[in-house]
Length: 145
Image (cartoon, rainbow, N blue to C red; front, side, top):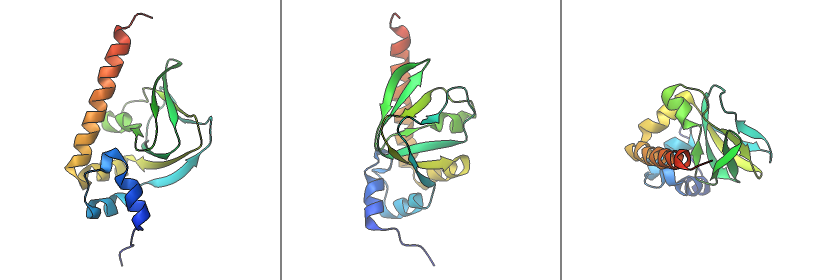
């Protein structure tokens, strides 16, 4: 028997830009992936240089993304981080620290793969996010210190 996902959960997922073009059926599948968890303010969610075995989708709260001690981005509801390590198998490129209490959806490597199979729109949205981050990183490198 299939588990029915409450409408409020589907609405919360639809608010995530990554899933905004998904059908209700696709959102039902997404809702079955990952593990929701709470993150206390000040806690490191990822650490630069460490191996990455999961990525995170911010459901509520906010976090800062730090490279070499410098804040380069902030993440809030609907943002995803940690996916690069799952895509290329490399170590974490940044540390992410909760700046406020957070709720996140953590996806293991296998669940991340399933997520990308759910809908092509998810992979396209993720590519767009990665392109924006690459351009921002290039701009930071070009700035004098």
